[in-house]
Amino acid sequence: MTKQLITTPADEILITCFGEVLWDCFGQDKRLGGAPLNVCWRLKSLGLNSQLISSVGNDPLGGSILSLLKQHKLNTGLIQVNDDKATSEVLVELNSRGSATYTIVEDSAWDNIQLTNEALNAVKESDLFIFGSLVGRSAVSFDTLSALLPHAKFKVFDVNLREPHYKISQVVEWMQHADFIKLNDDELFLIAEEMGCVYNSLEQCLEFIAEQTNTQNLCVTKGSHGAILKIDGCNYYNSGFKAKVVDTVGAGDGFLGALLYQLCVQDNPQYAVDFACAVGALIAQNSGATPNLTTEQILSFINPKA
Image (cartoon, rainbow, N blue to C red):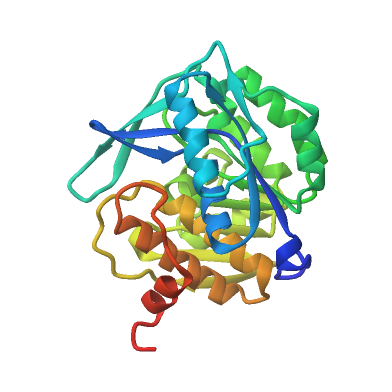
């Protein structure tokens, strides 16, 4: 592959995300969330045609999610409505630096995403298929994802480890089937060690995982210290942007959406990682995972003197 992920014209690109959609609960305040939804939202806001395969409950919270997505012109046709399972709510707790921990109730609607012909056809028609690790905690959604993956043209795996909702062996297997892997530095070191890596530096661990998974397209985020993007054996660095952090919820998801957007529309990996780090920082300066950001805001943040 070239440095540009796909060569389809931007207005013809179709991206499908798979996994959780939910309400992040900050006390009594609820914000739309779920990593795949956050990525999908950011891609759509930047101008790419994106859609989500997921499930909500047949309840007021599920109805609110569908209404909100429709207001923002996101396709809800692949979001199933489950009569027996509740729409997911996640308790978010923030520390003094705005970093979040999550309490995720099991057996919610998105744990039970069914395999449908509509979902299968969507994956077959998509240029990118994006999925995360959290959805693997339940047998139903795991089986559906397993059935969809062989039909994806280009698979993007968003490693998103949440205790106790993952198995390293399963994560490694998905990494070996992915065309692009995104993870944070803590996840990188943990997975590399579990895979037998003896190195200590981030770059060495990243190269180790690339070799072990035969995946030459990876990105590792480093919180406020930026990210490293590896494309076809070349590393591209950004050291981060100064941000007044409100909370970090969804910052990594927005980063991934912005990164994939840039890698799809132009052949400039360095600019892609710079742009993505700026989006992640701007999201961290807001409350919740899906603040409205204009391209002008992002460009001004990257280069305030322009």
